[in-house]
Length: 305
Length: 281
Image (cartoon, rainbow over all chains, first blue to last red; front, side, top):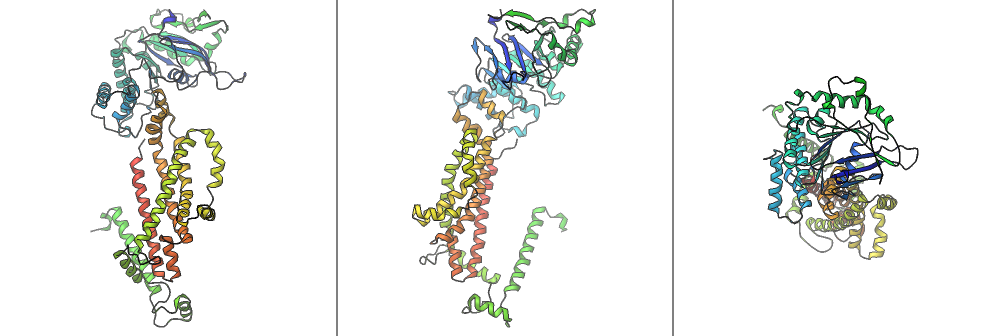
């Protein structure tokens, strides 16, 4: 089954030194992403989340391991993967329209100016920035800038969208609005998304699966939490759902307690690749043994072919 | 109207005019011819030009004003090699500065791009730049005269060599300092090398490059006066030296004033260009 997954990450490793006494930032990172899935990755600073995203984007190189997307190995950047950068990364000398047009022209160099403009307009309307086409980024608020960044990433119609903490610098109100918009756009376009966040609530609202990363160095993906809340969840009703706090507590408990100790449970057999176990804390019974919640389920091991 | 009601620029302008008036008044008092000159004055007058009537040394502001009016009324007259209008002299100087400057820009900006993009080339060229940069441009003059064998071209070379460094260094700094994020955007969009250079790196580095060009132009205008004093023939620098030989301090002071005004105009031109390419982050 896993050989048909849209994105396959195998034994990914990143180390900043070849010296044997220097531990890699992360290693033995294995996961699959299916088409149309929304994945969030959570972990403490320094565990290498951003590096994983940059490797997927092709702007950083892994020290080992492979990434295969759509049956092709990821080596270097590609227009198949749209990136929304943490700092929005808009060109300040270009207007909103021209920032998006720069991306659109990169993707379809043969398109006429009218076609490029019409295409850009579609995505400007999608992120509800109609009327701001001729503004420079400096004339926009933080939330609007990030929307331009999202529109630019969507406009090239990538096979996969990579978001590096896109809402980190926004105030809570703006963040909420853009989260709703992102959710609506993704539902409409069936976009595959890989997103880094520090915000547990954001992850539960947006993600189908939440990857939990242990602390670095030698960080790994410790487990994958399947979001069992209904797809129709909204920001307004999500916290009324009985499963919400179970999932939330599980995530917070991981970040606060288990992310430090979970490493000890990892097996390191060079002939086996360890897939992080999938857990569904939302479906746990109420009479769960509190001690069991702190015990990590064993990783799924597979023989290396 | 109360003073506090005036805006800052108007207040500043009034103060400037007052300072100018005070300066002109002191100048006038200091230089106006006296009926009974003291011993030192007579001696000084003898030294400065005994033959000239009424002159006691430095010209009065009035005399400068007269010379200014006379020259401005007819700036392009040409009465032979030693008597040309100020307009012609400035045009010669500007032509030399612009050709030397443009040649320097043609070399410095592409080379600066290369240095800024490649740490290897930066390290390889850095020692040469560090040694060549502090050399006074006029030190090149004998070598230029010997190899080029033409004084006018030599002065253009001197302008070239003095204006290349600020442009080169600023271009390299601007290009090397382009934000990682913007380069990553270009990278993830699979933008080609030329499209990246012209649509991302150039606009991002343009303010720094223009600053370098502005500094270069300032230096070129400083150096041209000295270069023309050496090579002679035409130009504002030659004009100053020629008028010193004529012992016409009036024309020397007038020329100094013109050098300042033209330099200011050149600088203003570049500040306009700089504002045009500056972006707010």
